[in-house]
Image (cartoon, rainbow over all chains, first blue to last red; front, side, top):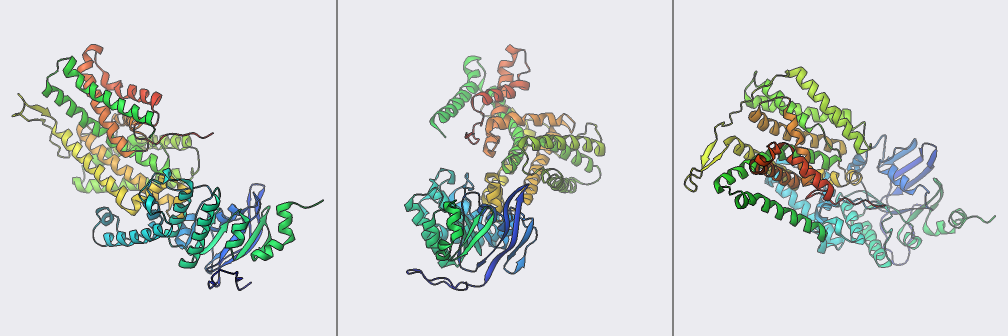
Length: 270
Length: 328
């Protein structure tokens, strides 16, 4: 599959070379096999979905990609480099951003500070100059603030920018989570159930944001989602996991037609 | 903050003001003398805050209650006083600062990193070990005598406001300078936490470890920074306390007073540590002077702990702490 399928109404984005590849990755917690021998790749600028029933190993897979878990076997290649041991903050520095299934925001901080924290990696000036807001530190702060304000505008959360995040409604918190990940200007963005617990309207908004991020920033997106309608609409290619194994991989239409997928979701007739 | 919690806070502060003013109404205290006691109390409160801030810093960023903060105060003061024998004050100060930073790095490497993801109580016990180690090691290297630390603080109290009150009020210059130093330190910490990227990272780590890592904040480095800042605060407290009372083992008993201060102010709030210190300093001085005679004295020694006990019963999160919510 080199070319994305062109659905009606979708804009053609140039899907590039493979940016992230997993080869024969296996991960076990004691005797429990979370992932066995999973291989798949993600191409630049595409939207790649990971689906599967509960406990299929989807979140574990994301955690392997951003370095929370270290697989016992297999290789992860990101932008041409094979990774060895990886810490999550190193993964972030290399350009892998992520959001969380259960919200993991800085609850005591404002929306603005949360998203600014996402740009921490990009801030270079001296800590003393920053404290006093003088010289290059001031210019840098202003530049970062401008980018953050752009993201806030983009996600349509201007009205809550100075609010403490812990007090916002759930749907808005999910947007802040996305904003914080975007602020780091990641090459690949991992979204762990970005629409979990949302109503239809909120889901539509979030879908629009994800498509826009992909279009406007050219960010490659790997997402886990349970809502089949959303997955089939958004994604270019879909990986299906069941009990830690890959059972299908392809375009939404191919996956939908796969007997293994239908069996995994609906059960097998005996 | 819920309405009932807010009412409780308001009631507490009303009680505090009424209690502070009561000596003049009930015991017929003279205003200048009362003012002297209040100022003295507030200034000794600032010194409690200095130790308490160190505790809060570490608790905020790593969820660890650092039992070793008192030992760090003593250790820093001991190191400074012994190094000043061989070199001028400023050189010794810089050297001790470097020692405290090295200590922070060692604590992260040897204690925190191997115990990552352990229960809070495990880490607390580990800091108990750090405290014992520091006490033993400090005394082994620098001796266990009582040393005088002379950093040029004025020892003579001054009489102020002579024109306003008859006889004026007696204020300890040493305490006044200590209070100024503490205020400067707090201002510097506030700038660091609110305005810098590192400060933002520290606050981020305090809120959510996992998320902080996902935006590229390295936990280990943050812990070293936090313990370094706590070391710096310990050094300042050590200088101020040491110059006042002499550098001796009992110095870390005073650090125990920081515990009721953080219970009062809330474990996660730096303003809470400051206000808590002021309230305890004020309360114990006033009660000692005006209630002491009817209780046979010694109130100063237990006042803080009784107040902390009352807070634990009715307001365990403290005045400014985050509300503790347990989900079932």
